[in-house]
Length: 238
Image (cartoon, rainbow, N blue to C red; front, side):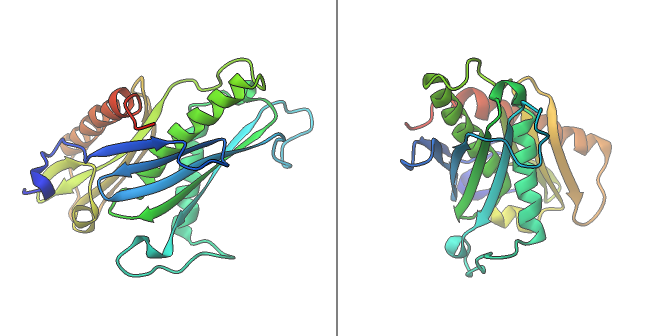
């Protein structure tokens, strides 16, 4: 199949992480995968969630996600008092992904809230949000250590996320909107640097697919996540 900019099936879009994008959040980044752009910030409260038991010494990492009105080609409604099922699902996905790579005991009795605001959407917004969330979290944790608020780095290992799918019978990675909108299979994969799977969401939009194709999707996603972690996280724009 012919992809935009003649991308190969295994090729990621141009990726950029601009760190410390805003000045008030302890950690922030503008995450860009092609034309998908997400501002992600990490805010820290020196208290654990109220639902935790009093003798629980762990911290917590949670997330909120928003698709801003002008981020798509037709204006989407701003979610003010009630969030959609899609938004809730993505928020929980981001939170679960980050907690999987954090030792909450080392974090201590504090809450880190990740805010992911999509300012321009062109596919894979949840995956871009997770990648940006990890970068923002890392910045915030580094500052907490520098300030002497925590002793040991609570991040166990890096994580990243990428979309993959089957379009026109071929397995491709990092789908843009045009590809995602007519994909026969749509997948979102979150993995750790060591290759462990945190989340593997995959759906056949039309005909079912076989185990060989599933393994190909997972292998291609794993290779792409390794590239994001090893190259883009370390060579982001500061």
